[in-house]
Image (cartoon, rainbow, N blue to C red; front, side, top):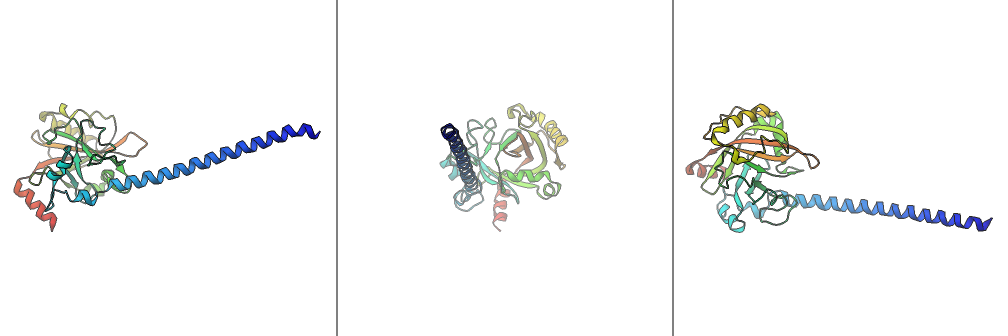
Length: 263
């Protein structure tokens, strides 16, 4: 009888070892995932807010500016600021729209990526319709504040921004709409070259008709529009897009703006 039980006991012990091994693997996987999550979150945080290294290149400063930043990376196209938000970043443009998804303004690997102009747009913002992309990073970094514009109170109190091209050239941004779309929306993500000046008023009307928040801002064929696009979350194709009209500023007005911002 005892001899008959030995194989059964051995089988039970083997089963226990297997269960313990599987439990150990699961615990190890959970620990590794937790460590990865911590690393991923910290890596995003490190690269997503405006650093002191980049802040010194702000075009409204006294010493350095976009010209100096362009010597570090020739892909630099400007500096984008939306007043009273965390959106305050240099703007780059790659040969395709994948280049700066995981590279920072210096061209180095970064999970937070960079704020970048659509590769199909003219680099000097002479196109009637310009699309700018930025990641949605939890905690208010990059383009996460774009999502706030869906709320009526926030939209009402945030109207202006600035797009700097150089120390002496800038556009005022007058925000006029916020839209919820998906990543395949043919109106928002159409080829910018397909939007001629004559089509711009109709495009603005279509944007206003589909947006969750709007304000009356006249758009003519002589104007230019920018769209700031970000994802609603990392697990879906939902997007939130903020639209503004670019208003060219004179050199005198640009210098006055710099002086005002320093006060």
